[in-house]
Length: 534
Image 1 (tube, one colour):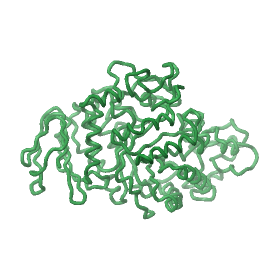
Image 2 (cartoon, rainbow, N blue to C red):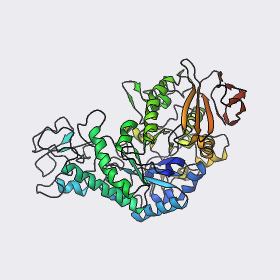
Image 3 (tube, one colour):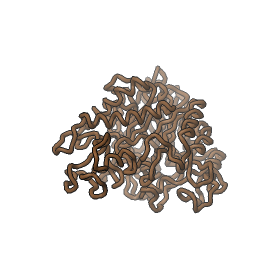
Image 4 (cartoon, rainbow, N blue to C red):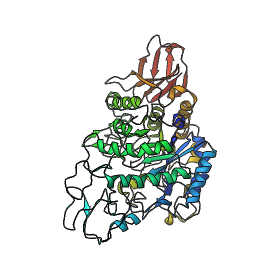
């Protein structure tokens, strides 16, 4: 990495579980998930096979963008509990050998943040340049979205997304107007220093690092390759890494060559599909414009797509190589809070094959809460600025009790309605059913945990991938120990001859979905099958 920083050792054994806190577990019957509810379910995460957590924002907020509009970076929102509750969560997790990442939103705040209130006044103060303001009330935003006429200050403020999310001032790559400060200039560095103080606050309390929201979008007008944003992160990491060498940072960036140069430990695919052109995540799991429908989905794990793994590998392998060169990790996710869940479009069997495969690929896995039981995406009215994302943020389904065990509140008091439709899965029922998706996830994570061959930085080599064929076979290896992973997501049986001289004939199948068989070096993969050979 650019700073010669070594990735924290604990990431080598980490499997993350993303928790959307308002929807995970409600301990006080007010209808909204909270921190004590998370603490109550830490042992469930360990039972599944997860030993690390990414928490979506818990900070004070007006909640017009579900907490990504922060009004106090260093205070837990009352609906989740207190700062002491979060400290207790860190302590409870650490006592179990678990690690916790918080969500950092460095690009903007809520317009209700005290910084913004000060910056928006008509008198000079220390926060004049914390946000990006034009020089006068009538001037436009020079091509950037702006809001004018709402504040006392003689100017308009630049926003990042919604009108209530003023952009913090990290400067411009190429300033063209007097109100545009230079990237890495004094104004921009003061913003960096303020964000460093936020990170120090939580790291000192016990956080183990951060997932960073839209990490690539700090500097306005940045060039291709994001050189000024990269240098901005290098400035911040140049200070933090010395103070907190074991803190981990994962970027919402999607281009690992840039993210790792900036100094991040991990990057992962976002769900990108622009003008019908899919990125790697989309190629695997969601190559469609109709997230509820199976038909027409060209994703690799759709049994009926006919898609080979070759296009994905062409997109994926250069990104993996960037991670290898940086000695950092490019990760795969099951889903997240911004992405439509894969059910009902994909079946439990399709998901069992998909998750088993991606958990055993390079990098550190991230599981979105409820994906391990096959929670469904639902077409729901927008809640707290979620819009189409709302349907992926519904309450966790724990058991068959009231509100599926999420809350004892009245159903009409819940943050979002629970899935009461027939067939809605629960964690309790899934654990009791030995052939459930939960057990397939657990088994794959146990394979990952049990051998160095599946560590994040273990070698990855493709043994079989052909156009016109559905099967995908790859090898992982580290410290002289290797394993082969094979999957056939299609409807027809396929046969793959493994390489001679590689010990293939001596391998045994240690994980099997769908009846795969090995005869010397000939691997037969029935329809919708998966196997691990060790």
